[in-house]
Each structure stands twice: as C-alpha cells, then as structure tokens.
Image (cartoon, rainbow, N blue to C red; front, side):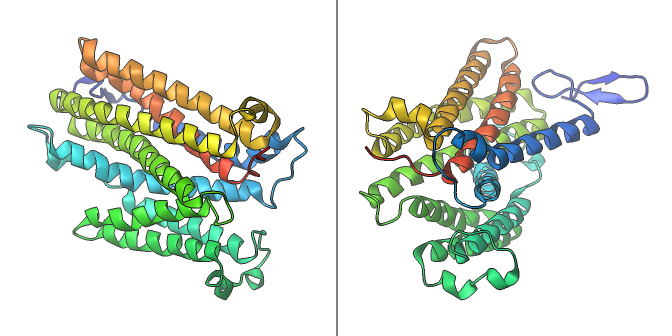
Length: 339
C-alpha cells in the first residue's frame, strides 16, 4: 500500500520502510555524488597509498583502478539481479509482475567499455596507450593476460545479448567467465600455488558480487513491490544468505592475505606498504558493512515494522560501493613483498 502526504505543490510517497522518499532531483544528486566518490578513490588512491613507502606505482595506476572499479560494478549489478530474482520467486504471494526494471543491459555496456580499456592497457605491455597506433590487438592473443582481457571483453558482449534476450538467466555463464578471468589474472603462473590463489579469489569475487549486487536489487525490488509482508520475507531470505556470504568472504580474504603476507609480517606490511594500507582500509570498511548488516537484521527480527531495516540496508549498499572501489584500487598497487 502506498501512503501519500500532500505538500505545497506535490505529493511525496513513502517507501516500505516508512521513510519519505526524496524527490527525483535529490536522488539524482545523491547518485552523482556517490559516483564521484567512487571515481576519486581509485583515481587518487595510488598516490595516497604509496606516499612514504618507497614503492613505485605502475604507469596509469589511477586510470587502471577506475576501469577495474567500473568492471567490478558491472559484474555486481547483473549477478545481484539474478540472485535477488531467484530469492523473490520463492516468496509466497510476491507481486512478481511489479519487478524493477533490469539494469543488466546498461551494466554490460559499462563492463564492455571498461574491459576494452583494460585490454588496451594490456596490449601495450601494461603501459597507458597514447593513441590507437600504440595498441597491438594481435599481441593480446600471444600473452596470457591478453587472452584473459579479450575473454572479459567478449564475455560482457555475450552477457549484454543474454540480458536482452528472452532468457536473461543465461547471463550467468559469461558473468562467471569474467569472474574466472579476474581470478586467473590476479595469480600469474609464476606465483607460488597459483591455482589455490585463483580458487580463493574466485570464491571471494563471486560471494562479494552476490552480496553487494544482491542487496542493491533487493532494495530496488522492495521499492517496486510496495508490499510490506512480501518485502520483509524477501529481505529476511537475503539476510540469511548474506550471513553465509560474509563468512565465505572473510575466510577467503584472510587466507589470501596470509598467502601474500606471512603471519609474522602482516602487522608491519599493513602500515608500511601501499597494498597493506589499502587492505587495512578495506577491512575497516567491511567491518562497518558487517555492523550495518547486523543492525538491519536486528531491526528485521525485532522492530514493530520489519521494513525499518531498509534504512541501514541502504547505508550498507553505499559502503559496499566504496568497498568495490577500494578492492579495485588493490589490483592497481604493487603486491606486498614476501619476507
């Protein structure tokens, strides 16, 4: 049921959580501010993280981090839609005909553009190309990183076509290919135990995309449904799965950290290396997200209006967006030294 309250010249609708929705202009300004923040973190982050460490960043690290932020976000959105839609179909009496408009096609376009930009960087030997003549497309087929970059470009094209087809669920295959490519890229064969590292990264990435993208689409679904009982049931189903996802993210994150930073050097490298500093910031942010998730779950279980949990859940989505940007920044920084 939608509640309307008259204003001086217009009406403002209340969302399922009971709070008054901001006008469209206010929401647009807020979104633009968040996008600007998400862009500034990877763009300015390398120089801030490297300050005083004696380490040198790769050329164009800020731009690379921005492109990878877009790529990660473009992966989160469609994966979250598929996940949340599956949960919604299991809610008794859910008004499925009022599902929110899919953002997957737009995410595929953004992901394709970001993957293409990253492929151009790989084609020049991880240097920033200054013109089309610097890009060696044929060279991409001769290197492992180039092949993975091309795989991501093609995967987003296929994902976009699937999103526009009658069976959008088929996006799961090309999107999984992107996650696999990212996991393999992060752990080259020269690394000790690359398959183990890639496996940990794959689980970490998949769980993170389900968590962030799933919560975003759940909140969009609640706004579209305007059905308090069904909305509370959907949020409850998501919260139960999110607890498992958080546990998997924590376990794989800790394991991956100990593989790159031996236990006796972790505390030192967390403050003296750029990678460690950004990793520490990510840990703090994830802890904040976990606290918001716990707050939302308590309100869902104990509050008179279960959909009051939407407020901390919205804040959780915002912080998760920052975590995505920080995670992308990590990929553009020099790896820590194994002492």
